Image (tube, rainbow, N blue to C red; front, side, top):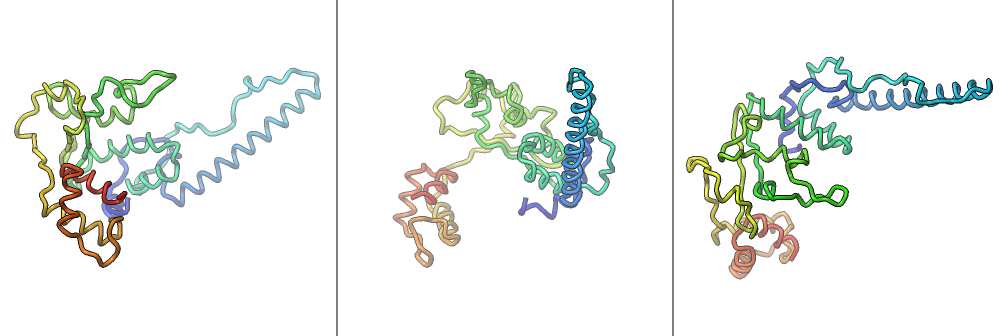
Length: 256
């Protein structure tokens, strides 16, 4: 959010969303207070009607009473000034709606033409495992059954980006790792065009030194205190330990 605040604040929301979603912070605070007040008023109305019914000896049936709360699915709101920055901030403020926010945000990004967009999916092979690592009622579901995982299964059986995942201006970058021993057969057989493949080689010693030096400068390198330099022994140790994989070098340096 911080890295792209300026760009996101220039991009309008183009989708059709419920009127209480993706509001700017000020309007969202007002909407929350208004909704809470309406809930309290509705509860008070029901308490009053229940008391009246019981005083008349009638059976109280709350299910037969229509709600006076506004329909949340209504889209009757002017979004001309609402931006993607508002959308992201709204999702952060409403964690229970974070998944829907991310899915809508992804759709919005695919339509952006003002700036180039890169959607990156790391270790995409994990999304094509026979089952996910997330159980539901004791059963491990297929990744396609989980909306968030399915949203990033961007490659079809021919090795191309699915039409619904393409971006208007930019690229979709998906990384496959050989770190896992059970790479799905899909990624052993799909004919991904050579022009769309990039081989990512392990970090060189110079690159490993640069990465460790950066971590040390930010005081994230646990083995070194501020002012100490990264020596060749540290470079060789972390490069060998992690087989030159950048993400693992970072994790190891921050933990050891």
